[in-house]
Length: 381
Ligand SMILES: Cc1cc2nc3c(=O)[nH]c(=O)nc-3n(C[C@H](O)[C@H](O)[C@H](O)COP(=O)(O)OP(=O)(O)OC[C@H]3O[C@@H](n4cnc5c(N)ncnc54)[C@H](O)[C@@H]3O)c2cc1C
Image (cartoon, rainbow, N blue to C red; front, side, top):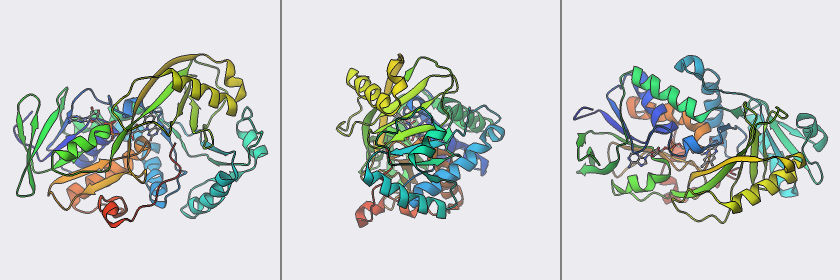
């Protein structure tokens, strides 16, 4: 580790590694990534790896479509396996309000060039024969949605960034950021070292609020526990990731056979708690079995939890800020930061290195909360 860097990135998840890689690729190689634990130890290594373009907000659709283009050629670009698989996402509406919302949303998504179809229950059953169609009103399917292995994707960016000259300090925490006359001057580490820099990138996931506080900024990003479980390996029997908005669940079958399932408890408070609970297991298994009855008999192998970094409109905050020169952030992904991570990191790197991203990040600026220009992303689970 040197005494000074052109930029210090705080966080070694998908965002930290991918941003470092894209900055170095643009020629800005004097970068240090600081990770307080190990690479992918945060939400990235705890996520379901789902990659979906079927969103409600136009910006999220574009960000996810841009990421899918990157995912499609990422193994070749990074020279590293990613286990990327396009098995589609099947979204189910068991309530009329959801069905109506699907109809409107598909129009917007198709107008943006997304290959997505509105299905009736019979057509949905052709795609996954085991779903419960009792009370099912409509579904949507996008064949280019899919999933990837979050560890492999992150390690791929990590190795590629290192090859381009990026430095790493793992098991090292940033404990303070020094700001003089509204400009970043350096970061203080828990080792006692001070690293000089004019650029800091906050990609600290569930701890983003604490890092922003180090430069005197209060951001509306709060950690919320989300739990997840995986079954014993089963013979492959369905391809897409399935979401039911009525039940608040998602589940998909891994390439190794296990069915990975998550449920977002709307009553979960803000906190850094990432302990597993029996309550979750009871909830998620009952809800998954309601949507796919043959899952009733299956054994759970493992469960874990991680943080969603929630914002008031369930959309991320990306870009610089007016108050502090040299401070950038990509935070508050509200449960979908893995899938939009590659495109977000590319745009953030362009902003930092070139001064201008190839797609405007203005709709996701911190300012939107001050201006009151917020519209909640409804498709979050
Ligand atoms: C159960 C669950 C399922 C999910 N499923 C999906 C999914 O299917 N698809 C999807 O797109 N998203 C999913 N997500 C959300 C996704 O995991 C996150 O949005 C994404 O991983 C965020 O990446 P990140 O790099 O911003 O943060 P993280 O991966 O959390 O990385 C931040 C890192 O910063 C480090 N850090 C924090 N503070 C400091 C400091 N002061 N100094 C040094 N290091 C620090 C942390 O140790 C951490 O490793 C899921 C999340 C959970 C919890």
